[in-house]
Length: 347
Image (cartoon, rainbow, N blue to C red; front, side):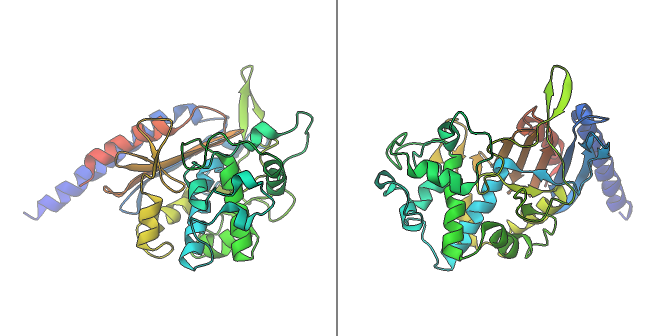
């Protein structure tokens, strides 16, 4: 009988080794002198896979590591949503507040748009990307987005009547956080989310306006068979919709906090993961900064030179995170493939 625990432990070890080899095969295209990726598989808070592949910076041949910070792009939205929920809990704002209460320069047509609708992409706001003047050569910041939207009287649809993914909405949420908290958005996220969770290498990056990213991965795109640095474009300076940089090591701490009350209370976590609205994919619904598909809550992030995803199976306590500094491929299916063996072996 004493041998049984040893046999079980050995069997689990063999399964873990086999699954780790499967991850290496899946990530083979990221190895070598190419833009890289970092992969994390968590089960019950334990890192079963914590690996990096390829390069964080091709020009200096600086390899990617688990501490490498990638631009999260739209994975940022879950932090923006969490900040809104923190301020709601403190009574500093309400989810049914009109966005014009916080940003009165917006036109009268936006009066019925609520923070809740911004969280769920049901506001009808015009995409700010479609409002950028053709001759614009400098990056837009959040105030530029606010000015563009303040001059725009059209909506795609009546607020609350439909779904359309909206970076505009999350930029405005970031500005509302600043107005309600009295703090700049980077400082609020640092003091209220990143520092309390020990995410000491995560930050909302603003080029030329704050600390640099210490272990920064630079983004690349493949052009005519060669990798070209494409790290920033006109929309890379906006914040609430996509400006956070983080690593798989720090995101492990974020994932752990989503299981308990250390940051968000149970009500807020339930709301964030509730499928509030259908999306343009019949298999996906949207919560607050999270997509919901079956038993998974997840979000992808795509920005010029970066493709990322975090997929969580809360019932099984399994999470897979893939961060990459290249323009393709989109890693959602890759994360599902990586998760397979760990889900099958979960209790």
